[in-house]
Length: 64
Image (cartoon, rainbow, N blue to C red; front, side):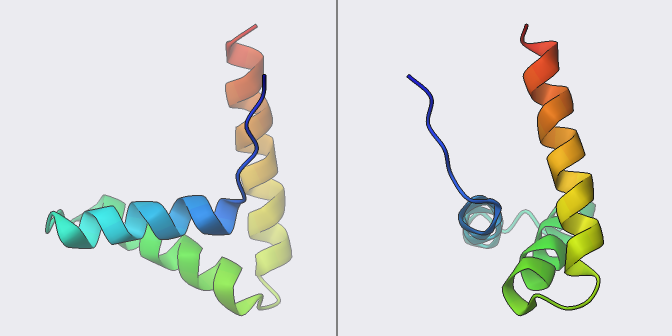
């Protein structure tokens, strides 16, 4: 069984956890920026969507 979760929900969850545990570093900054781009749906969001889709495909292909 496959579980599908949106990138917005996933980055929002990671951001909430990072803020909760006060893990404020470069990782938190990247998650916050990604969350902001997905949330605002700016012109750069399409490029970020393509990058995230490519990363998701790469991770999926590693598991095979």
